[in-house]
Image: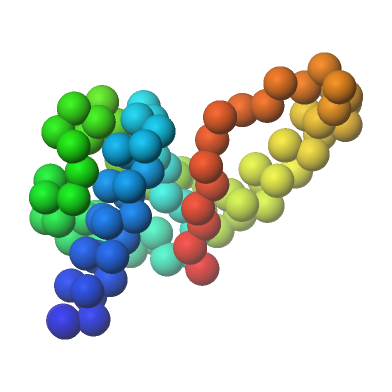
Length: 102
């Protein structure tokens, strides 16, 4: 249980840094490991309040993706299609951070 607690605290610290710096509307975790989100998310909820600013934390929702293990591949393919079809000189980009856990 100590490993789970330590990893939850470290993940909450990383999320806290991202929310404090970027103030995103949503952070979506995906990948095979997130199929165990019911084990991971409560630990994040436990530590995040002490590791992030209240204002940035309240504006950000943490969710798990619905695409499962293929989310990273599907996101990369979609991004590649967007850049190649639209063209790199006209593509403004999305303001997203992707984190996929295996």
